[in-house]
Every structure is written in C-alpha cells, then in structure tokens.
Amino acid sequence: MLDLTGNSHSNCEGVTRRSFLKIGSLGLAGLTLPDLLRLRAAEAAAGKNVADTAVIQLWCGGGPTQIETYDPKPDAPVEYRGPLKPIRTKVSGIDICEVFPRQAQLADKFAIIRSCAHKESGHGSATKNLLSGYPHPPNTNEGSLLYPSVGSVVAKVRESERRNLPHYVCVPNDSVGRGNGETGSAYLGAAYNPFGASPNDGPKSLMVPPELTAQRLENRRGLLTALDRLRRDSDASGMLDGMDAFTRQAFEMVSGKAARAALDLSLESVKVKEKYGHGTAVDRGYPWGQGCLLARRLVEAGVSFVTVVMGSWDDHSKEKEAMEKRGPVFDAAVAALLEDLSERGLDKQVAVVAWGEFGRTPLVNKGGGRDHWPGSMSVLLAGGGMKMGQVIGSTDDKGARPKERPLHPNDVLATLYKHLGIDHTRAFVNPAGRPIPLLPHGEPIAELIG
Image 1 (cartoon, rainbow, N blue to C red):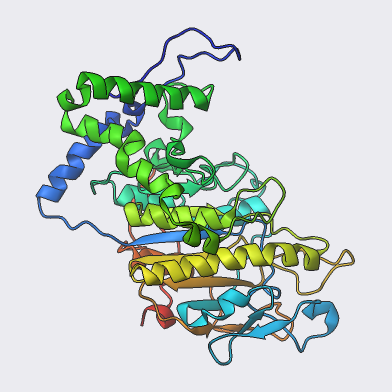
Image 2 (spheres, rainbow, N blue to C red):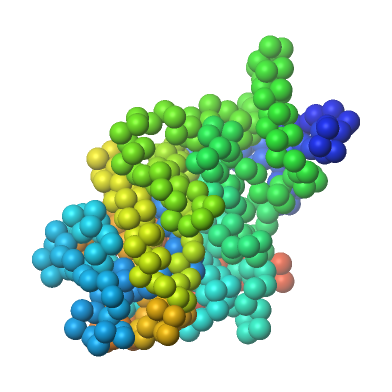
C-alpha cells in the first residue's frame, strides 16, 4: 500500500498537514493499485495485445445551438435562422457558421452529424444519457449517475494494460457537472473514476478522484507538498530503488516523470501554444485551447480517454453576443487540435468528438436566445481512421427534427467504442448480479467506419 503522508500538525491556515494520498484504497475486491499493476503485467506477459487507440471528448456543456454551429439554415425565416451567417468550407457543399473560419478550412479532417436526437431536455438527465448511453429515471435530473460513463468503461476494460498514466482523465477537473458525477464510474467502483488535470497547474496538476483517498484531502496544497517531500526524501535515501516494482509504478503514475512531462505545457513551443489559443470563452473560465493541447499531450503519453470540459453554452438570451465571444475561442482550439493530431500522425490513433447534451430550439426566443431542444443536435467527429469530409444526415428546413438518417447519441458512443476496440454489446455485472450491457441500443455509424 502506497501512502504519501505528512506530519499531523496544522498550518497557519488551520488545515491539517496530515492530508494524504493512500493509493492502496483503490480496492475493488481488496486490490491495491500495485496489485492491479501486477495483474496487468501478467496479462501482458501472456501475450495479450495492448490497444493504443484513444478518444478526446470535447464536452460543450449547456447545449450548443445546432444552427449557429454546424447546421445553419440561411433560407429559414429570420426568427429561425438567427442573425449569424453561414460560410463555405474547404469541402464543397458543407457550410458551417461564420464564427468557425479556421474549422472551415479543415472540413476535410472532420465529419458532421446533423441528424442526432434524443428525448432528455434537462441538463442533468441529458448529460447522464449522453455520457453513459442510458436514460436517467424520471424525477432524478440532478441525481447521481446510475450507469458508468464511457471513460470509466474504457478504464475498466483496459485495466489490465500497464500504463504510466491513468486511462481516464478530465480537464480541468474530475467532473463535467456540479458534483453530480456525470463522468463517474457508478457501480464499477471508485477505481474507474476519472483523474482531473488542469492546464493552469502545470506538471503537478494530476488530481486523484476523491473516492480513492483514505480521507478526503482537506487541502490540495498539502498533497502537492507531500508529493514533493516524498520525492526528495525517496530520491535521497534510495527508497524507490528498494520498492517493489509495481508499488514504484503506482507512485510514478501520480508523481513520476511520465505524468509530469505530459502535464507540463511549458515543454511545448510558444508557436504551438499560441496556435491553440489562450482565450477564455466565459468569465472565470480556463483557456479551452490549452485544455485541448493538454489533452493531446495526455493521449500521446498513453491516456485512453480524455474529456475536455468546454461549457457554458446554455444561451437562453443574447446568443449572438455569446457566440461571437465563444466562437473564436472554440474555433481556434478545435482547429489546432485537429491540425496537431494530423501533423503528429495521431489522427488514426485518436478520435475526437465535440458535442453537448442537446441542441437548441429552432425558434429564437424573445431574449435573443434559444432554449433546450433534444429534438435535433449536431455532432463533430474527427480522426480515429474514420471517413472525414462529409455530412451525415440532415434536419428539416428549420433545424427542428432529423429529416434524413436519424441517429441517436448511442450510435455515436457505439462508434467510439468500436474505435477503441471495445464490443459495445459487452455486459458488466452490477452489484445486484444483473448483467448490464455497455449500451442498451445503438450501432456504429456505417458512413464513418465503412
């Protein structure tokens, strides 16, 4: 069992310095992290393949408008089409909103689904539906996640693969919601919850899921101090050399060179960082572009699933002003990520999905915004060796409902699972002994995968 422990007295802020990280409390069936790593090594030695595919999910929480992003309706009446105009892209016949000029030049590197729809109109229930594949029970919109999120499923399926970094990371923290656990592992157990990492915090930013600690950390600064102190002490004493190899790997997963290097954006050139952009799309937000750059570094280092939270799309009023502020930030981040993955030869290995929990009403309301609308939404997909430069499906003349090739968010999830080499019909057994399929329905999208 690996403990990072400080002294028990309090500091001047009244916070105990005995805040600690006990990685050994992972414990599904009593397994410590070193135990799990031993199992991974044993399976690797037995000749099992280690998948190198990954997914970056750009989560546009709040619900992006389909009309002011990827499904403009220039011929609709003004109260439907809105004040923003479409622009042509590099691919003939594909137009997107004028606030995305950089993406327009990369249309051959992504595919747009315009005919995605579902039935959940509440933020909490819709988010849980999209991130897990399961509808949430009625009257539990803001309740706990009852089914594991996709990232947790990936972490569970790939737990036998030996890595120096976690399989599942969320940027800039460990949840897309407000403490409701939309990104969590549900009945799979705390070992498969996401780690958090912020581009603002540099090489020390990897945050363990709170459930993995023996007690909730009272002060994250205390953890960082303990990590630094243990690293200095262990290096000086040679303690790491005497550790069991797998205990050492558990320690390195959190504080070692691989994690620190992946999280350290200072290792990137100024040119690359500028390309992604430093802007924030919402007050008190973090730079979305730097979050996407961090995601690229994480998947390149071996993380299997990264969610980058790019929220605050809930524009019930003044949508034009919001999109004119948000659009360039989002555009730069997405365009830089797709270019970067392509230039680094990662576009087949890494799939990118950009979406939110639903679309917006086709009719502009009196406040100049659009309200919740799960009846149609647009999804951007890129990389993963999929067929790019195309639009899949269409909506009616006002962007209200799918017209051609209606799809469900579960079809998107099934496509991502296929890219990751995971059978979406596979089932896990919940605590009641009931087998639960990864998805209750949905099939990989044939137009993307051939």
